[in-house]
Length: 428
Image (tube, rainbow, N blue to C red):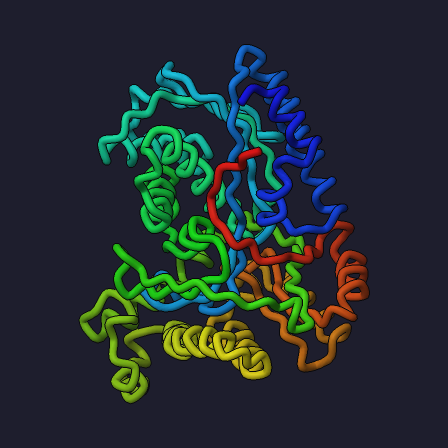
């Protein structure tokens, strides 16, 4: 569809069915998304004035609910796609280059004739684009190229997985246009992980990409990382009387690589004592009986993090079952125990190198002052800096958002809804 026709269709509400699925049915939300998509179309026209035939794509961020730091040990996790997303206006061509212009981040150009790993691109969006294109090419997909402009409200460092959302977006664009949608959600997730591991240079697990690709509220078992077991659930927290809130505590992620890397390294050091690579391969009861003999061979923290893994893996399963049974009280009981384990055993509330910077701990304390000592609140995602997650009673949401924004700054607290679909093309 040409740009003007698409803009007219959005103004006329002809894309509203798709937008309601992604963002909700509130008139104010739809108006905001109309303005957002029209802005993206205008900026695309300014940056690529010679491109007229366009298509629109979207990929969501994600929130982790249960299974904190279990995926990299081939464990289980509970997570959901959210209504914050990255969108792109795209024009396809056969020029053999991907030109990607992102609002606030400038232009990257990827020559599809050279899909080798580049050391100078490590840690950049250009590396992710090249890696995803390379993986599709290795699958036998011929990519002509495209020009794109994107805007995102999955803020970098927000703990909502902006990188996985971006990877899902690029994978979806290529899959729809050049691969006849032959790659399913699991394959899109693995392609994103491959690009992040090999081209971007970050040894991430597969959780974030899987949630962003599938969408919805999902339980994932990573026992077989080549083909994780994914089950989608339908549970409406709003109908149960709660809003899902994420608060950005404004902690810096700079110099936290060692903190993140240490978690899987220490867990693997325990697994190695049993001749295994991952804790999922270790018998839990044998491990528990062996704790006295492990001391001195592994660090104390590594042993505690291993205990966290085994208990957390089972909690993720129990949380999913509780929600499947509609037992919200049992879910919150397990959720609170998971939160305590992350704080006390996993120890990912703040960086050891910055012991006085405790934005996450401060936010959890503040949440309990607002909501009560039994508040369902925890560190969100990888931890050490970044975000906290809380299930807030709907009658207290306005107060909670106001007070958290007063602590961390306007716009720090997000009220989220679960998005039922992953990477998608938006049609009018």
